[in-house]
Length: 446
Ligand SMILES: [Zn+2]
Ligand SMILES: [Zn+2]
Image 1 (cartoon, rainbow, N blue to C red):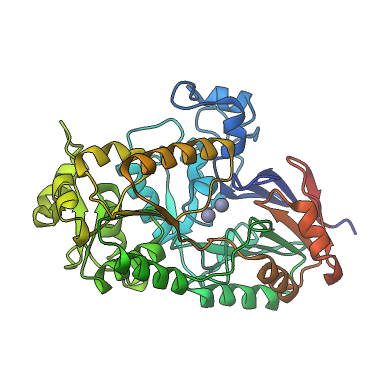
Image 2 (cartoon, rainbow, N blue to C red):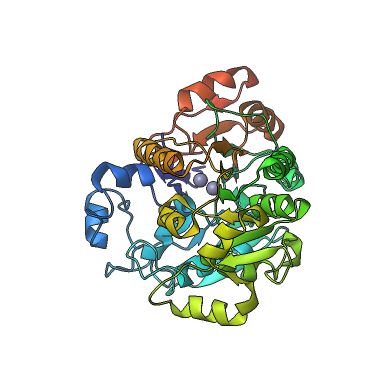
């Protein structure tokens, strides 16, 4: 008897960190898992802001958008993809859903939808991020979503953004497990444990796993980050300036606690405030609301404000604080300020004794290295020393190996990594077949 075909094709996330786009074909069903922007591929051709993509066609011609039939809204073709599942809201997993036909349903967690919509509302319309035409379908852990005969079980995992999921996919030829981005050392390790336990129960044929963090792993925890932030803030006589990812609510909570423990306000950007207001409504996330007495919103001096900024200013008038106030009362604030807003430092005039805390990953590509040098020049100019306090959103090497052993698949496909060979050798003794993933190659699983 001829068995029905099941196959996997990787259109992104191959030998690169991010850009995941995984196509599953099972008989006549076609499902994509993640459809992110590949920063790597994009960087090969473009240099913002002077050279940015002008059309969908140019992105496709350059291979930044993969050549998949019946997928894109800018092509007059019949829909051929049944559904897209998004593991989490990071752009390297989600941004390019912008190009998809509106008839293709996008499945994601509620928080992912909230974050993507908040980003969309606070960002000028953009070729590479425009999600207004899409139909989102919300799932939660415990659901079983049927796309034709294929069953998809989303299970929450812990990552550096809330609302992250892994998937357990039941196909004609066996179960496929996809981790998305995940970790076991974060604030909500239990969620990842739930996912791993459920995955191992299914005796999977395939595990598609991330392997981002193999050459620069730091053993730490969000608890430790919090403790360090409290200590640095306590010892700092001037202003504390912090840079961390807008949607990383664990880090937001840690900075909030550092402010509160030291009798300071945490002043966040308007964009972050807009997002936090929406996320704070979800009681599961346990984040302080904007009304909290230790929170303020940093309002930049501008000629004109966007509609969403005006609304925020009106709603939270008493929460707004300007650059001059923050500078004058430096020892009363932790201010979140991205490097790209450093012009504000001229208005803030950080007092002597101020510190800068980088609470994101270290630079990992050439562009980031260049920006990092510029950042150091600014800190030099303003006399602020830099601390690096961070814990990764990605699983650490030994935890990864233990997790793969526990899930115990027949085959492992490492994605979201520049170290496929390293990981294959590192887990060789587990006697699991590690497949070297090639971009756009169709792996038939029967
Ligand atoms: Zn990622
Ligand atoms: Zn991620």
